[in-house]
Amino acid sequence: MRKIAICLITLMIIIFPCYSAVSDEVQLEIKAYKLGGKEEFIELTITDALSGSLNIVEGTSDVSTTNQARLDISDYIEDFLGRLPSDETTSDLYGGILFSYRLDGNLPGNYDIDITLSSFKKDGGSDIVNAYFGLVNENVIFNGTSKTESAGGFSISRVDEANDDEWGVTSGEIKASLHTGVSITSPAGAGKTTDDIWIARGAVYSIISSGEYEAASNGEYISTVTVTITTS
Image 1 (cartoon, one colour):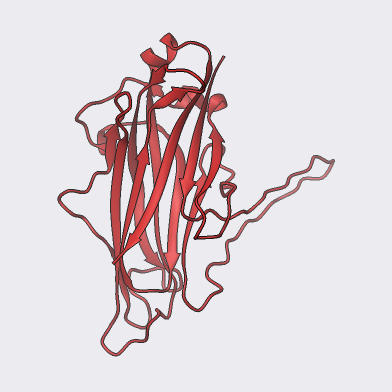
Image 2 (spheres, helix red, strand yellow; image 1 turned 90 degrees about the vertical axis):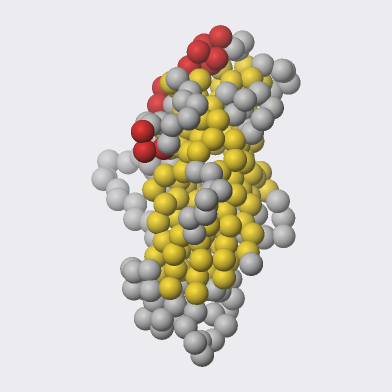
């Protein structure tokens, strides 16, 4: 069989294990994320979107360490296979969502979110399966007010620049590059941090070349994903 996996490399991934049990009783699991906990902070969280479990991808919260985790999409491959587009936008396409990101913090500034994704390359081999990747479901908000403005007058907005790339197609060793941005501004006379936690969310989806997948030899194929946050 062909086994497809996504390797995620991020500046910050937080561990949030999920446990389940089988019994004669019906069990309901309720999840909630507590944001912040520090005087000044920026956090990046990558969430598995494959099974709907909303599990945070295994990693570490140490921002100084680059970390790697894996998503195995073998059991969901039919959701991703299709014909690769070449010049269409995400609004015209349908694909499976791989993972979502959440960037949150309490410091104003401009934050660039760059995601690079490689083609699926056979582990230990040279065979390649190309894929289309795109950004969807992007939104920004303050946690307390559920609006783009905090009670203290801070505001958050997406940064739409002419050179922003929200979709891309791999071609052999050429990676797909996705880019988006968010800006948090403070009112005159405000302190160093916001009075409310701001949140920027989005998701990455993919279409994997069905023709190249069917023609590929058996083995494990891996796409390497790098998520980078820069601030100014």
